[in-house]
Length: 119
Image (cartoon, rainbow, N blue to C red; front, side, top):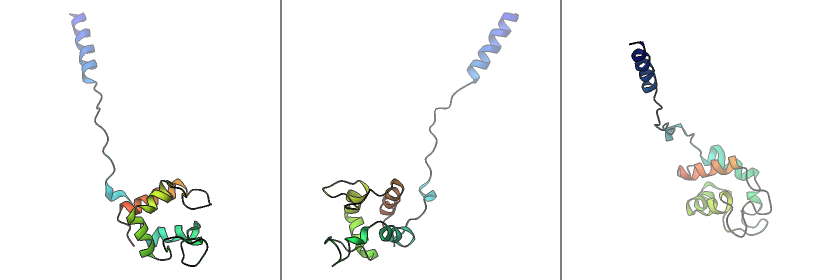
C-alpha cells in the first residue's frame, strides 16, 4: 500500500507539472511612439550631412530637396530613402562620403516610413 501511495504521489506530481509552450504576445502597435517629421526626421536630416547635397544649388547636385517635409516625404514614400540610407544598397549608400547612420536612427526612420511618413 505504501508503494502504491508513493507511486501515485510521484505520478501525480510529475503529471501536474506542465510547460506552457504558448508564445508570448507581441507588443501592440499602439505601444510604438509616433514618429513624425517634426519630432525626429527634420533634426536627423539637419545633423547628418543630408543638406550638404540635398539642397538645390549647394554641394554636389542631388535629385531631391530635403529642406522641406514634402521633399523628404517624396523620397520616403518612393522607397529610395529606405534603399539608400536605411538598407545602404546602391552605388552610393547615404550619407555619401560619411559613416552610416546609426542603427537607432535607421530603425526610427523605418518606423517613420512604416507609420506613413507623418508630418
